[in-house]
Length: 329
Figure 1: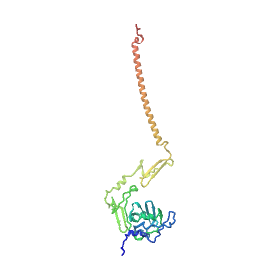
Figure 2 (figure 1 turned 45 degrees about the horizontal axis):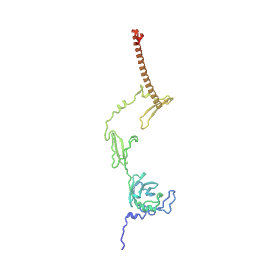
Figure 3 (figure 1 turned 135 degrees about the vertical axis):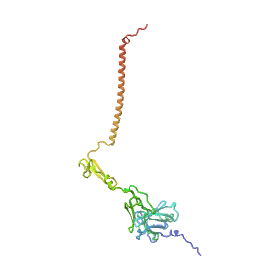
Figure 4 (figure 1 turned 45 degrees about the vertical axis):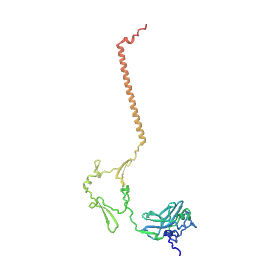
Protein backbone atom coordinates (compact mmCIF):
# COMPACT_ATOMS: atom_id res chain seq x y z
CA UNK A 1 0.00 0.00 0.00
CA UNK A 2 1.41 3.37 -0.99
CA UNK A 3 2.24 5.81 1.75
CA UNK A 4 -0.10 8.78 2.16
CA UNK A 5 1.68 12.08 1.78
CA UNK A 6 0.23 15.45 2.77
CA UNK A 7 1.70 18.40 0.88
CA UNK A 8 1.86 21.59 2.92
CA UNK A 9 -0.83 24.05 1.82
CA UNK A 10 1.50 26.82 0.59
CA UNK A 11 3.50 24.26 -1.39
CA UNK A 12 0.26 23.11 -2.99
CA UNK A 13 -0.33 26.73 -4.03
CA UNK A 14 2.96 26.71 -5.92
CA UNK A 15 1.32 24.27 -8.34
CA UNK A 16 -1.92 26.19 -8.86
CA UNK A 17 -3.11 29.74 -9.52
CA UNK A 18 -4.40 30.41 -6.01
CA UNK A 19 -4.57 33.07 -4.55
CA UNK A 20 -5.35 34.23 -8.09
CA UNK A 21 -8.41 32.88 -9.87
CA UNK A 22 -7.86 29.70 -11.83
CA UNK A 23 -9.82 30.94 -14.86
CA UNK A 24 -7.82 34.19 -15.16
CA UNK A 25 -5.91 35.11 -18.33
CA UNK A 26 -2.26 34.95 -17.24
CA UNK A 27 -0.79 36.16 -20.53
CA UNK A 28 0.84 39.55 -19.84
CA UNK A 29 1.10 42.62 -22.02
CA UNK A 30 4.45 43.94 -23.21
CA UNK A 31 5.38 47.63 -22.63
CA UNK A 32 4.04 48.47 -26.11
CA UNK A 33 0.63 46.96 -25.27
CA UNK A 34 0.94 43.78 -27.35
CA UNK A 35 0.16 40.42 -25.76
CA UNK A 36 3.27 38.43 -24.87
CA UNK A 37 2.11 35.25 -26.58
CA UNK A 38 3.91 32.19 -25.30
CA UNK A 39 4.52 33.71 -21.85
CA UNK A 40 2.44 32.90 -18.83
CA UNK A 41 2.61 34.19 -15.29
CA UNK A 42 4.26 31.45 -13.19
CA UNK A 43 1.95 29.95 -10.60
CA UNK A 44 4.89 29.69 -8.21
CA UNK A 45 5.32 33.48 -8.01
CA UNK A 46 2.60 34.13 -5.37
CA UNK A 47 1.52 31.39 -2.98
CA UNK A 48 -0.81 33.39 -0.72
CA UNK A 49 -2.40 36.79 -0.32
CA UNK A 50 -4.75 38.55 2.09
CA UNK A 51 -5.85 42.15 2.28
CA UNK A 52 -8.26 44.12 4.44
CA UNK A 53 -10.56 46.58 2.67
CA UNK A 54 -13.01 49.08 4.11
CA UNK A 55 -16.73 48.41 3.86
CA UNK A 56 -17.30 51.47 1.67
CA UNK A 57 -15.09 49.87 -1.00
CA UNK A 58 -17.26 46.73 -1.12
CA UNK A 59 -18.90 47.42 -4.51
CA UNK A 60 -18.17 44.02 -6.03
CA UNK A 61 -14.73 44.96 -7.35
CA UNK A 62 -11.95 42.73 -6.13
CA UNK A 63 -8.22 43.53 -6.32
CA UNK A 64 -6.34 42.24 -9.33
CA UNK A 65 -2.70 41.83 -10.29
CA UNK A 66 -1.84 44.61 -12.75
CA UNK A 67 1.95 44.59 -12.91
CA UNK A 68 4.91 42.22 -12.55
CA UNK A 69 8.50 43.32 -12.99
CA UNK A 70 11.44 40.92 -13.07
CA UNK A 71 14.72 42.84 -13.03
CA UNK A 72 18.04 41.47 -11.86
CA UNK A 73 17.80 40.24 -8.29
CA UNK A 74 14.25 41.41 -7.68
CA UNK A 75 10.59 40.75 -8.38
CA UNK A 76 8.00 43.53 -7.98
CA UNK A 77 4.24 43.18 -8.12
CA UNK A 78 1.55 45.84 -8.40
CA UNK A 79 -1.99 45.20 -7.19
CA UNK A 80 -4.88 47.49 -8.11
CA UNK A 81 -8.47 47.98 -7.10
CA UNK A 82 -10.20 48.97 -10.31
CA UNK A 83 -8.04 51.58 -12.04
CA UNK A 84 -6.35 52.79 -8.82
CA UNK A 85 -3.19 51.20 -7.45
CA UNK A 86 -4.00 49.50 -4.17
CA UNK A 87 -0.54 48.37 -3.06
CA UNK A 88 2.83 47.16 -4.35
CA UNK A 89 5.70 45.05 -3.05
CA UNK A 90 9.24 44.05 -4.02
CA UNK A 91 11.26 41.00 -2.97
CA UNK A 92 14.92 40.17 -3.58
CA UNK A 93 15.85 36.67 -4.71
CA UNK A 94 19.10 36.77 -2.75
CA UNK A 95 17.25 37.46 0.52
CA UNK A 96 14.09 35.47 -0.09
CA UNK A 97 13.04 32.11 1.31
CA UNK A 98 10.37 30.03 -0.39
CA UNK A 99 6.88 30.99 0.85
CA UNK A 100 8.14 34.03 2.75
CA UNK A 101 5.48 36.58 3.77
CA UNK A 102 5.78 40.35 3.25
CA UNK A 103 3.52 43.08 4.69
CA UNK A 104 1.46 45.26 2.38
CA UNK A 105 0.41 48.88 2.93
CA UNK A 106 -2.41 50.50 1.02
CA UNK A 107 -1.93 53.59 -1.16
CA UNK A 108 -4.04 56.65 -1.96
CA UNK A 109 -7.60 56.41 -0.65
CA UNK A 110 -6.74 53.01 0.84
CA UNK A 111 -3.74 54.19 2.87
CA UNK A 112 -5.54 52.99 6.01
CA UNK A 113 -5.72 49.42 4.68
CA UNK A 114 -3.13 46.67 4.66
CA UNK A 115 -2.44 43.00 4.33
CA UNK A 116 0.12 40.33 3.44
CA UNK A 117 1.55 38.71 0.36
CA UNK A 118 3.49 35.43 0.31
CA UNK A 119 5.99 35.09 -2.50
CA UNK A 120 6.55 31.48 -3.49
CA UNK A 121 9.57 30.05 -5.30
CA UNK A 122 11.14 33.14 -6.87
CA UNK A 123 14.15 31.25 -8.20
CA UNK A 124 11.88 29.01 -10.24
CA UNK A 125 9.73 31.97 -11.27
CA UNK A 126 12.87 33.74 -12.55
CA UNK A 127 13.59 30.73 -14.77
CA UNK A 128 10.06 30.69 -16.21
CA UNK A 129 9.60 34.43 -16.69
CA UNK A 130 12.31 36.40 -18.56
CA UNK A 131 13.42 39.75 -17.20
CA UNK A 132 11.08 42.55 -18.15
CA UNK A 133 8.14 44.72 -17.09
CA UNK A 134 4.77 43.08 -17.72
CA UNK A 135 1.32 44.63 -17.42
CA UNK A 136 -2.15 43.13 -16.95
CA UNK A 137 -5.32 45.15 -17.55
CA UNK A 138 -7.38 45.74 -14.43
CA UNK A 139 -9.59 42.74 -13.76
CA UNK A 140 -7.71 40.34 -16.08
CA UNK A 141 -5.94 38.55 -13.20
CA UNK A 142 -8.22 38.97 -10.17
CA UNK A 143 -7.60 37.56 -6.71
CA UNK A 144 -10.02 35.09 -5.17
CA UNK A 145 -12.73 36.74 -3.07
CA UNK A 146 -11.72 34.59 -0.10
CA UNK A 147 -8.41 36.52 0.13
CA UNK A 148 -10.25 39.71 1.14
CA UNK A 149 -11.13 40.80 4.67
CA UNK A 150 -13.76 43.50 5.08
CA UNK A 151 -13.55 45.97 7.96
CA UNK A 152 -15.30 49.22 8.84
CA UNK A 153 -13.34 52.28 7.87
CA UNK A 154 -12.33 54.28 10.93
CA UNK A 155 -10.36 57.36 11.88
CA UNK A 156 -6.68 56.39 12.06
CA UNK A 157 -5.47 59.58 13.69
CA UNK A 158 -6.36 63.18 14.51
CA UNK A 159 -3.97 66.01 13.69
CA UNK A 160 -4.29 69.51 15.12
CA UNK A 161 -3.30 72.45 12.93
CA UNK A 162 -2.47 75.84 14.45
CA UNK A 163 -3.84 79.22 13.44
CA UNK A 164 -3.30 80.10 9.77
CA UNK A 165 -1.74 76.66 9.29
CA UNK A 166 1.60 77.87 10.67
CA UNK A 167 2.11 74.81 12.87
CA UNK A 168 1.02 71.21 12.52
CA UNK A 169 1.11 69.08 15.65
CA UNK A 170 1.98 65.40 15.88
CA UNK A 171 -0.91 63.00 15.07
CA UNK A 172 -2.93 61.59 17.97
CA UNK A 173 -3.77 57.88 18.07
CA UNK A 174 -5.82 55.56 20.22
CA UNK A 175 -8.48 56.95 22.54
CA UNK A 176 -8.31 60.68 21.83
CA UNK A 177 -10.06 63.14 24.14
CA UNK A 178 -11.29 66.59 23.07
CA UNK A 179 -11.16 68.93 26.07
CA UNK A 180 -12.88 72.29 26.27
CA UNK A 181 -10.64 75.27 26.91
CA UNK A 182 -11.43 78.62 28.50
CA UNK A 183 -15.00 79.73 27.85
CA UNK A 184 -15.58 76.85 25.44
CA UNK A 185 -18.05 73.99 25.53
CA UNK A 186 -17.74 70.58 23.88
CA UNK A 187 -21.00 68.80 23.16
CA UNK A 188 -21.76 65.46 21.58
CA UNK A 189 -24.95 66.02 19.61
CA UNK A 190 -27.13 62.94 19.79
CA UNK A 191 -28.20 61.52 16.45
CA UNK A 192 -25.85 63.68 14.37
CA UNK A 193 -22.60 61.72 14.84
CA UNK A 194 -20.92 65.09 15.41
CA UNK A 195 -19.00 66.97 18.08
CA UNK A 196 -19.78 70.64 18.59
CA UNK A 197 -17.15 73.11 19.74
CA UNK A 198 -19.04 76.17 20.91
CA UNK A 199 -18.00 79.42 22.59
CA UNK A 200 -19.72 79.63 25.95
CA UNK A 201 -18.82 82.13 28.65
CA UNK A 202 -20.78 80.19 31.25
CA UNK A 203 -19.44 76.71 30.65
CA UNK A 204 -15.89 75.68 30.08
CA UNK A 205 -13.02 73.60 31.24
CA UNK A 206 -11.48 76.61 32.99
CA UNK A 207 -13.45 79.82 33.32
CA UNK A 208 -11.55 83.07 32.99
CA UNK A 209 -12.29 86.35 34.72
CA UNK A 210 -15.04 88.25 33.00
CA UNK A 211 -13.89 91.53 31.48
CA UNK A 212 -15.66 94.85 31.77
CA UNK A 213 -16.58 95.08 28.10
CA UNK A 214 -18.23 98.50 28.39
CA UNK A 215 -15.18 100.13 29.97
CA UNK A 216 -12.79 98.39 27.61
CA UNK A 217 -14.78 99.47 24.60
CA UNK A 218 -14.79 103.08 25.76
CA UNK A 219 -11.10 103.40 26.65
CA UNK A 220 -9.41 101.20 24.04
CA UNK A 221 -10.39 102.99 20.87
CA UNK A 222 -9.21 105.88 18.72
CA UNK A 223 -11.23 108.99 19.50
CA UNK A 224 -9.43 111.73 17.54
CA UNK A 225 -6.77 112.12 14.85
CA UNK A 226 -4.82 115.42 15.14
CA UNK A 227 -7.62 116.72 17.31
CA UNK A 228 -10.37 115.84 14.88
CA UNK A 229 -13.07 113.34 15.93
CA UNK A 230 -12.67 110.06 14.05
CA UNK A 231 -16.24 110.29 12.82
CA UNK A 232 -15.16 113.15 10.56
CA UNK A 233 -11.67 111.99 9.56
CA UNK A 234 -10.84 110.56 6.18
CA UNK A 235 -7.28 109.83 5.09
CA UNK A 236 -7.09 110.29 1.35
CA UNK A 237 -4.38 110.79 -1.22
CA UNK A 238 -3.96 113.76 -3.55
CA UNK A 239 -4.68 111.68 -6.68
CA UNK A 240 -1.20 112.60 -7.91
CA UNK A 241 1.78 111.49 -5.85
CA UNK A 242 0.29 110.32 -2.52
CA UNK A 243 -1.62 107.05 -2.41
CA UNK A 244 -3.49 105.68 0.62
CA UNK A 245 -4.53 102.06 0.86
CA UNK A 246 -5.67 99.67 3.56
CA UNK A 247 -4.44 96.12 4.13
CA UNK A 248 -7.08 93.73 5.47
CA UNK A 249 -5.51 90.32 4.81
CA UNK A 250 -6.52 87.54 7.18
CA UNK A 251 -3.05 86.91 8.59
CA UNK A 252 -1.92 90.57 8.72
CA UNK A 253 -3.15 93.24 11.18
CA UNK A 254 -5.35 95.88 9.60
CA UNK A 255 -2.99 98.56 8.30
CA UNK A 256 -3.16 101.93 6.53
CA UNK A 257 -0.36 102.45 4.01
CA UNK A 258 0.61 105.91 2.76
CA UNK A 259 2.89 105.75 -0.29
CA UNK A 260 4.70 108.33 -2.40
CA UNK A 261 4.15 107.41 -6.03
CA UNK A 262 6.24 110.19 -7.59
CA UNK A 263 9.54 110.32 -5.71
CA UNK A 264 12.05 107.53 -5.97
CA UNK A 265 15.46 107.38 -4.32
CA UNK A 266 18.26 108.55 -6.62
CA UNK A 267 20.72 106.26 -4.90
CA UNK A 268 20.51 102.76 -3.67
CA UNK A 269 22.11 101.17 -0.62
CA UNK A 270 25.38 100.37 -2.41
CA UNK A 271 25.79 103.96 -3.63
CA UNK A 272 24.97 105.40 -0.21
CA UNK A 273 27.48 103.04 1.42
CA UNK A 274 30.17 104.20 -1.03
CA UNK A 275 29.43 107.88 -0.33
CA UNK A 276 29.49 107.25 3.41
CA UNK A 277 32.85 105.47 3.14
CA UNK A 278 34.27 108.30 1.00
CA UNK A 279 33.13 110.93 3.50
CA UNK A 280 34.72 108.94 6.35
CA UNK A 281 38.01 108.76 4.38
CA UNK A 282 37.94 112.51 3.69
CA UNK A 283 37.27 113.23 7.36
CA UNK A 284 40.31 111.16 8.32
CA UNK A 285 42.45 113.02 5.76
CA UNK A 286 41.27 116.40 7.08
CA UNK A 287 42.12 115.32 10.63
CA UNK A 288 45.62 114.30 9.48
CA UNK A 289 46.15 117.58 7.64
CA UNK A 290 45.01 119.50 10.73
CA UNK A 291 47.66 117.62 12.75
CA UNK A 292 50.37 118.51 10.23
CA UNK A 293 49.28 122.17 10.20
CA UNK A 294 49.33 122.35 14.00
CA UNK A 295 52.84 120.84 14.13
CA UNK A 296 54.04 123.27 11.45
CA UNK A 297 52.56 126.22 13.34
CA UNK A 298 54.32 125.15 16.53
CA UNK A 299 57.61 124.81 14.67
CA UNK A 300 57.27 128.27 13.14
CA UNK A 301 56.55 129.77 16.54
CA UNK A 302 59.62 128.02 17.94
CA UNK A 303 61.83 129.40 15.14
CA UNK A 304 60.48 132.90 15.64
CA UNK A 305 61.21 132.70 19.36
CA UNK A 306 64.80 131.46 18.80
CA UNK A 307 65.46 134.20 16.25
CA UNK A 308 64.26 136.88 18.67
CA UNK A 309 66.52 135.57 21.43
CA UNK A 310 69.56 135.51 19.13
CA UNK A 311 68.93 139.03 17.89
CA UNK A 312 68.64 140.36 21.47
CA UNK A 313 71.94 138.68 22.50
CA UNK A 314 73.86 140.21 19.60
CA UNK A 315 72.52 143.64 20.42
CA UNK A 316 73.69 143.35 24.06
CA UNK A 317 77.31 142.40 23.13
CA UNK A 318 78.25 144.22 19.94
CA UNK A 319 81.98 143.30 20.05
CA UNK A 320 81.41 139.63 20.37
CA UNK A 321 80.11 139.03 16.97
CA UNK A 322 82.34 141.65 15.07
CA UNK A 323 85.87 141.27 16.59
CA UNK A 324 87.84 138.51 14.89
CA UNK A 325 90.00 136.23 17.02
CA UNK A 326 93.76 137.03 17.36
CA UNK A 327 96.11 135.51 14.83
CA UNK A 328 98.13 132.52 15.85
CA UNK A 329 101.84 132.96 16.52
